[in-house]
Image (cartoon, rainbow, N blue to C red):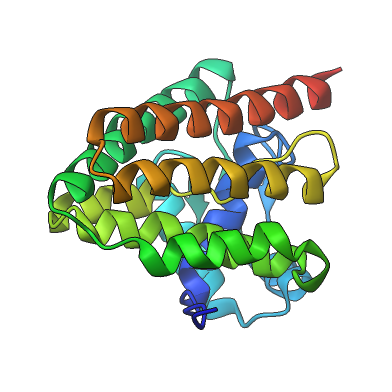
Length: 214
């Protein structure tokens, strides 16, 4: 299995907070303390501050001078719009990567290893592998602007039922199916699998969002 690249702290934190807001873990109007979040995540204040700046630019939060941030009004429409953009952009990325004959052999082997050896994978391992698959496809699409846009929509694995391991195992199987199609050069069907993959994440997040409103 190939080594999994470490994602910069600011990107990991941004994705973590983005997912938490989309899932309703942080409610509209709630104050986010830079110091508290840094402590909770076990990091310094600097990458959290950078994550706040990114999320403010994306419309998730309003920054407060020296006081952290306030979550903006996030509703089901906001969540749906977010994932619809991911579907459009990631669908195009996988289509382009396939037509550029991107060699997915290593990614496919890593996914198959994960599927065959679930006891050897922690949830952190699955999360890292998941991100490596997606970001590798973005890069293979060979469009820097597309890559940057996709980084701004990344929210990581989306789980609503509390059974993260089950979610990751399903995700691995979806990745195997998509990568197999890419390897055979079937760009159209690979895009369809990516679409279904992200729609499942969207439905999980929407369910979590709705459950937290009850």
